Image (cartoon, rainbow, N blue to C red; front, side, top):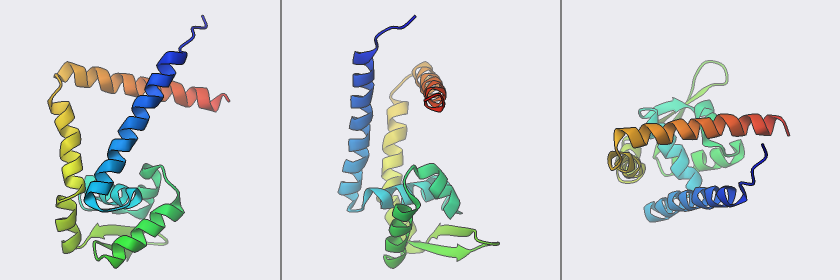
Length: 145
C-alpha cells in the first residue's frame, strides 16, 4: 500500500528544523558557536572527558569543523587534549571549562530533561520507541537508495 504522507513529512521536517533552531538559539545565548556547543555537550554527557573520536562519531558534523571548535576551546582554556595510545586523543575539561560548562551546556541538558519530566513515563516511552522505529526505518530506506 502506497500512502501519500507528504503533509506528515513536511510537518516532521518543520519540527526537526525548529528543534535545530532552538539548539542554535541556546548557543547564541551562551555566546558560543554551534560546533563548540556540540563539543562541550558531548564531553559533558560523557562525564567530563572522552575520546576525540567519540566526538567525531556522535556529533554528525565534519572532522574539520570539530577540529576548529577544539582549537578554539583550547585557546579559551576550556578543554585539554591529551595524546593516548597510538593516534587516540582524550579531550577533557579544564577547571575553567567545567565552570563554563555548568553555565552553558549543563543548563541545556537540564532543559532537555525538563521536557521529559513534564511528560508522563508512558509518553516518554512512546516517543522514544517511535523515534527509534523512525530512525531504523529511515536508515533502511537510505540504504536502498
